[in-house]
Length: 357
Image 1 (cartoon, one colour):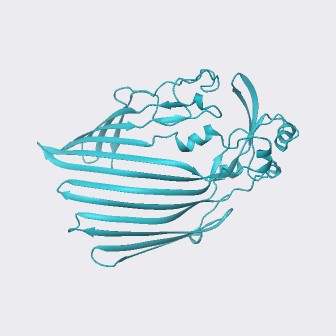
Image 2 (cartoon, helix red, strand yellow; image 1 turned 30 degrees about the vertical axis):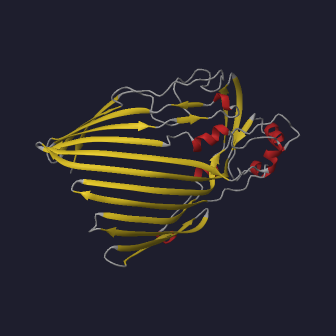
């Protein structure tokens, strides 16, 4: 059981106004996990105001830490799978298992991160706010769930393990990769009086890129069996399974007890990579999704809300198997299920009553 006490996690935050416009701040955090160990992380940040606070320049640098989660350490299961027209037994062994020591898989260690941000904010006129931020996140020794590890050659350590445990493949959690993510955030909002109410116009844009840095760590017995511990398909979950671009256009209007918000979101394309054959990769194109929200305050304590998500009933591109039976598990799926762009439920409607006490 993982426990925490007040003494196990301590944070100290400090800041100082060097001048009326120049701020420096810092924080130090100490953590202790009863089943893992200690960590010390910190953050340094600064901010400088220009032209009577109309413009702000800001930046920060921090370190991060994440201990392995409980399921990453202790999950152990053997499951029967039906895939590609065959039945197989796949085992996942916990990180303390003797099987992983036989395969020379080291015990899980913490993920360490370095975070850098730099940005500018502006209020050039009444009602208008602008911001632009750059960020970079480096994660060292990232914990991943491996590809299926299999070998029919019983002379290899992998083959012997599979035979001894009567399984056809195995998977495990290990510190296999280090990654670097860079991106930008751009945000603009403008509020103004229109008729009897107030209108809000908003634009938000994000673009980012994640890449694997250095070599993928593969234990020698697994490498000797010719197994790719983190194949192209698993890599795509980190590199391309989520949109690298996203644009949100917002139109809102408030009038007394009533307000309405219309969001148009452009989800960028995502790419699923085949485990071994690049010709079977598929990119699912960008799509606009429209959401409508209506709110009405019946009284100061009771409110009504209606949400229509995906108003125009947009769906992702269908899966193109390129003749690979396993890509959609033999016809089980029509829309992408191994990459995350947006849902494939079409239009959904919800209504609720909000009560304040």
